[in-house]
Structure formats: C-alpha cells, structure tokens
Length: 310
Image 1 (cartoon, rainbow, N blue to C red):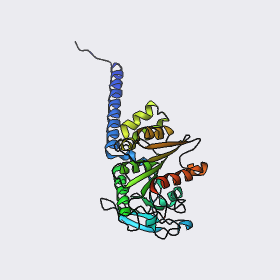
Image 2 (image 1 turned 90 degrees about the horizontal axis):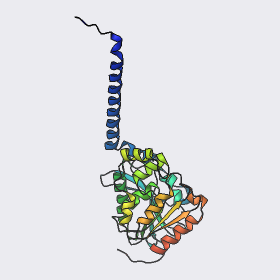
Image 3 (image 1 turned 135 degrees about the horizontal axis):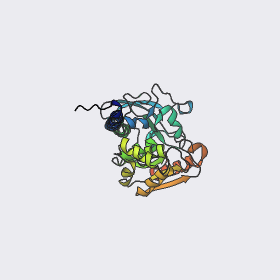
Image 4 (image 1 turned 90 degrees about the vertical axis):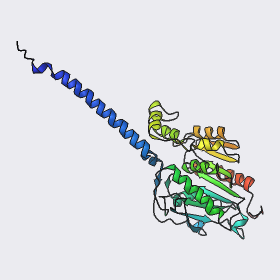
C-alpha cells in the first residue's frame, strides 16, 4: 500500500525548523560580533573624541612654548609648556602636568588650568595620540597611558623644571589615565583630579544604564568593555596626596565614582560640589580655583621658593 502524505501537514514542521535555525544563526552572529568588538577594542573607542589639527594658545597664554616629544613607541606628540608668571625662571615654580579629558584637544582643554600660571605654576598640557597635532590614533587606554608617561619624561628632561616639584591635574578621562601613571611615577608628588571615573566598565555601564547601572547597562559593559588598568586599583597604590573634585549632579561620571576613588585612596580627599556637573565646575563653583591653588601650594610650594635641584 502506498501512503500519500499531504504536503500541508509538513509546512508547520518546516517553519518551526526554519525559525530554530534562524535563531541559532542570529545568536551565533551576535556572539561572534560581541567577541570581535571585545577582542578588537572597538567599543573602547567610544571613550575618545579627538579633534585633530593645529592648535594655538589663547592670547592670555601667549608665552606658551610649543613642545614636541615622542611616546614609547615613537609616536610624535605635541603640547604646550606655559611658564609661571612673575618668576625670573620657570625652575623657581612648581610644574603641573595637565592630562586632559576625552573630547577636543589642548586648545579647548587649557581653560581648565589657564589660571595656574598667574598663581605661580608652570603648566605643561599635551595631546594624546590622535588629538590636536599629535600623531597616531586614540584606540585604547594602553598607548594613552604610555603617552602620559612620555610627558612626565619630557618634563624631567627640561633644565627649567624642578623635578622635585611636579604635580598633576587630570580631568575626567585624563584623571583616570593619570592615576595609572602616578601609581608608577613617584616624580608626580601630588594631584588634583576632577570628575574622574573609577572603572572603565562601570563608566560605560553608567552611561548606558544610569547610576547605579541597570542590569542591561551592566551586562553590555561587561560584554563589550575590558576593565584592565582600573583607576580605582591604581589609586590603592598611591601614597601621595590627591584632591578629588566632583559634582553631585555629574551626568557623565556619577559622583559614586569619586566616592569609590576616595575610599580606595591612602591620602585622597574628596570635595563634593553640590549641583555641579561634569565640565563646568570652574564656572559654577568658583572655589575650584582656590581649592586647586591652595592644594598645590601646600604640597609643592609656591613660585620663587627653592626646594633644591636634582
């Protein structure tokens, strides 16, 4: 006997198998995409928003010297050395290494410290690779940490810089990069960090899922962002004084990051600025300038003082 099966009875089974196969292909593709993004570090590039091209200091910083130096891998970097006002030689004044934030370049970021030369401090602000006139591309944190180490070396190579009076100012990304350098470079005697995040992964999670991050934000950050060179881990290793300035209404890096850094630090102090946001603390809270000046004077001295040479 020959049995003839109606074709319409097999269609649901075929559709079911097709859906299962499609789901498997989708899931496999998603896993592969996540692995590619994670291993290549593509998602980390979202931390960097460089503006490239020539940069010029503002008129009130006309004494700025254009400086070029090399990172550890030979990448040519650019910065400005701005001498302190009212001193006969820059060596008489402390020097502040300015490690800037994630967007723009030194032309837009020098505003954060442009009051320090008048207060008696040299300022050395530089661009990471891929920013301003610096060569290369900003793709991951490791090379930017290396660029900052090279900036310290560039300062130490100058005869007009007192190597015993070097401090650091870091804003946002710059503070997180700077902490990793300060942990290994005792030449940085003190630091002021503004709006700095404690963890790369947690910063990404907060950007996606609020503070505290929701499960989706945490999951995506865990899958897509590596968390090596965590600033909070570097903070634990530093025994020198650090002043943390953070706005309580920071919509980019929540205040919880500042609190975590302060808790991890051996000699860290956090000043919470009520209602302060991410990039405008100096505008909204004028005490930021005096707090910074007083902190650096306390730990580095004032221009004109002699603290000895190398």
